[in-house]
Length: 406
Ligand SMILES: [Fe+2]
Image 1 (cartoon, helix red, strand yellow):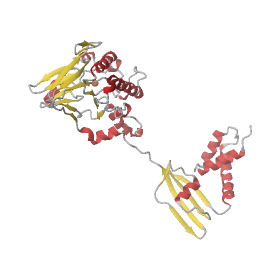
Image 2 (cartoon, rainbow, N blue to C red):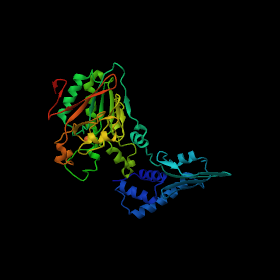
Image 3 (tube, rainbow, N blue to C red):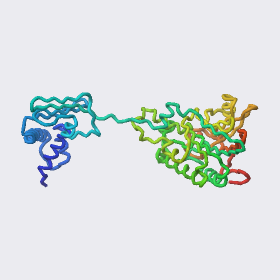
């Protein structure tokens, strides 16, 4: 089969114009045109000879043209009897892709009589690294301030607090029952707080990274399932959705995202790796987001702080209240159900909503898991800002709420 000589010549000129070396042009031709049977070295010499002639023919004058590559820099130079007088013209002449290359340092343009010299050094553009928005927020602690929801006089607020759902390892039966509860009570509910560990983010876990057995659980899958539940919640509220206050607090599991991004400075992802906030479209869905899993909280009424929680020991309700005895607390980090009071204030440990039998939680021993309890919180705030908490304990397939079995 014959190959078109013109095609080969054009290819050589094209690659040469891009600054590809003669050796690499020869390699490129060999791989592209299997019909070329001459050896690499002969082909390289042919390329060099051809370019010499092509250059002379093209310019028909004493124009010196050179492209040199060294240590990642490319230097383009044009000297002699030509009418290129500026950097822009040089870029156009050599067809330098300014999306990829940028000028490195000074460039020169001289002229004497009819002769000119234009020379410039280029380097590959640095990739622009933009950390995702939440990451920046957390680092700067801008969003450390709590969200405070005050009640007006004569107002009664009912809040639903769902913690540690651990999508995609949630207890699906219970979540469906809660969606039914939302449908039944949407007109009375004032706000919903997703109180951390809404997502499991097992795919970013450091715990089980070397273990197999959870095939198919990718970050994309976890985000997809998380978003599906966010949309189901929206649907359950129906027309009331826009009125409902919506808060998303990060838990330590969402914070796995920050840990991951921090590694390697996994900054090589740039802003391409969506954060939970972005992936779950929280902004679009009207959520106020608190990405600080350790210090972020929502204050309901006068004194009930709702946060993900830190302590995990035998009596986390006591531990949390002891650390901050002048405020009441609601949290779920420990997955237990418990109550503690110091006389003035209370701590409510409101359980979790994951599927206890899922292999995803094999990192915890059966003794530890025995203490876990599926539950969630319902808070009423009266017009004076006092709180009245109902920790809704669940059995395997449902719960009772407001006189109804779900
Ligand atoms: Fe959790």
